[in-house]
Length: 324
Ligand code: GH3
Ligand code: MG
Ligand code: MG
Image (spheres, rainbow, N blue to C red):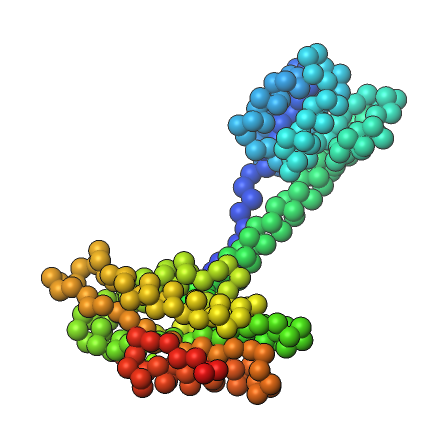
């Protein structure tokens, strides 16, 4: 089940473009600033050499750096190299005198464009805007990828317990079963269910029941290995997929789980209105693959479920193994 009531607003924010103009000649800086300001709303900052520019770049994220080549202390080419290594996401445009033939050199060093003086106003404006737009596109793409990752995480997570949800479990289980069948490698399938959970809700209220589920989610996540898949299968029922785990390994995981849950004091710092939560226990059923009787993943799951049922029948707070 997904718990998204609404798809979150996926608008990306880019803000005002910040331009850093680097030139040792005041009048040149002034000219570029005026030209750019005439066409669009830019936030423009200035530096008179490479060193000063690098200082500014330390504290501020600029949308673009436009730099002259010949400057005292640090020239534009050195600045270009430093910007590209220290701030790879910041574009750099080189502005240089006609005939200097800086183009190839600057391209090699990662410049995004090279404009020769004296430039035509329109050309200058267009080329700055084009580089800005290109980097905005990259920024948009990165923000969308990040939003995608977040949505994906939400789509496969059970919101109460923090472990995987049923949808994800179903997908992964089929994939893991197929992988085990093809390569004939061990696979453990474990189902477990909280004992007398209805009593918890009846005695302490539904929110306290939720708290128990939450804490159990943390316990499960801490108990299984990173390669194992732990999911909330239903209300108070959980499933574990244990890839490349033999029978002995499966029993070890089940014992660990039984022990940790059976000794954890639930709702320790949760207000139960003066009451103390009784000891929570779980019943566990496990099945193992490869076994020729399991032609489909569904049969394996079914056997784990049957073993769980037996664990309930045989007194709860115990483990039953489908292969025994
Ligand atoms: P058994 O030992 O046989 O498993 O007994 P049980 O009481 O745990 O089993 P039963 O299936 O009769 O009851 C399950 C209870 O789990 C009933 C349901 O209200 C409760 N439950 C299911 N999902 C949630 C949930 O998300 N939050 C809370 N608080 N309770 C839940
Ligand atoms: Mg139960
Ligand atoms: Mg149940």
